[in-house]
Length: 68
Picture 1: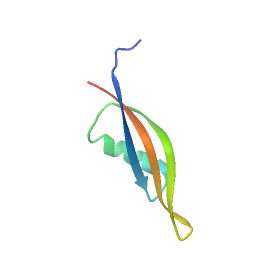
Picture 2: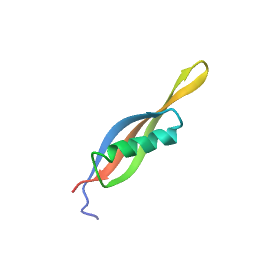
Picture 3: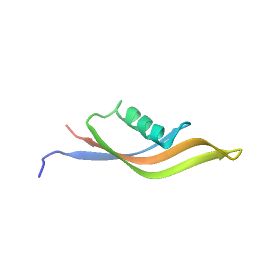
């Protein structure tokens, strides 16, 4: 068993392009505050709709990173 200590933070992110882009933005933003990111778990997907079109792709995700 590894002695690594991991922490999980829950984040919300959105994109005008796609859910994948929202996930990439979540990682990019989180990496400014934490390092050693190991994984992202997408908990929920949501979209904002205007005039019968998706205008925002939103995710609720858990990001796991290694503690020093």
